[in-house]
Image (cartoon, rainbow, N blue to C red; front, side, top):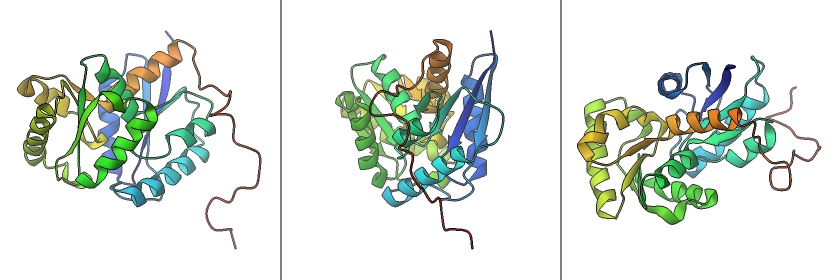
Length: 242
């Protein structure tokens, strides 16, 4: 079996978070899959809200546009609910899997309705819109915030307590499966799944496995219509050089 090479892009500039995401991706990957993490050189230290999301999307696109490392077979976008998914599919010639829709698709195979537990409440509407665009919003019972910022997730005890409280709210709303609504939550599915008594889907692991499947099946993004290659024209990425 040939090696599958996956690029995993963090949506923010915090390298320690990239490292944590890559650890989660590698633990989920099949033998023979290599995972390389990319951290944007510019953008936001944590993506929380519409402004951050649009800025991070541009930074991720720029990171992939200027990538000059070894060839890769697929891209995993590790920003839950962040923008840029459709643009990246136009930009690169390999399968692109967003952790948001990957987690939701797998959750739909495990229960009739799923709930997303995320960070700040301000991100909930953005995630709902992303699920709607991906066509998986119909089965979402609730998107619930924990009240924690992305950079607060390093406090394990506090994160677990906040996640459990938010998970109960999602369960009461009808969720039969839970989805981790932030790449920085990777790993919680192992520690909290049994305690909650519900399946817990990690988007990073789900996206890596789906990316592997697309590569193994020889499938790529369709160029017929919506994700056709970008129109050839002048584009300025950042301020012109003096």
